[in-house]
Image (tube, rainbow, N blue to C red):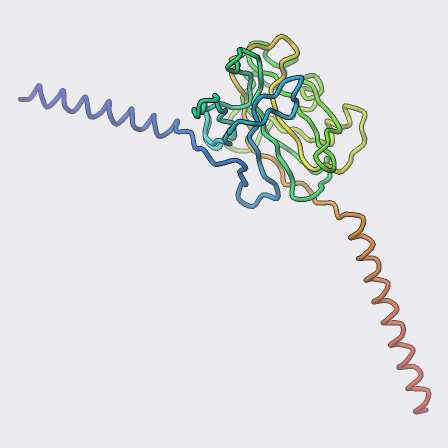
Length: 262
């Protein structure tokens, strides 16, 4: 009897451990698009990114996911084409035709924002501060920067991005977490700071990288500072001028009334 109780206790302990691990590693599907709390942008999951379709292929139903590999991480669950999703991050995979393709995240702002006001945080390249480049056995990132009407105005390679990685040293943050400023990326590409509508994160496949890669993940995408459209400047300026003229007219009328009384 005592032995059976010991066995039962051991089985319960193993079961509890398995449940705890399952819960800790559970991937959450959060839709497509996904809007983080308080964000002024939407996140769209992409798949089928390659040289012929740099912004991804249509006809699939990928999902933005959370908690893939790390708590609060943001990745992509891609559609295998048969109604099944594979939970993943931002990396390379083989499609059903054995073609090398990448998942991606398209961050679209609600209005145009200044590129230099956008800071994004990414993680899990298996590198440390002081590294000379990305880990060739891991994954290397690419970024498409989008201008008005979501047109591609810049394409940043792994080399362009690596020079703009800044270690994220916030309290409680583990290593291998990096900040990237999009204005700095544009500067590396010899492009002046400008307004952008969003950007696309994906995995590079031009430097010999192979699927299935160990993907990287998005931690956060900065809200950015919204830049008013030119028409709004004109309306605002007209309002200021009208208010100034009205105030001037009122002063003149008061002076005339005072002169008549005198």
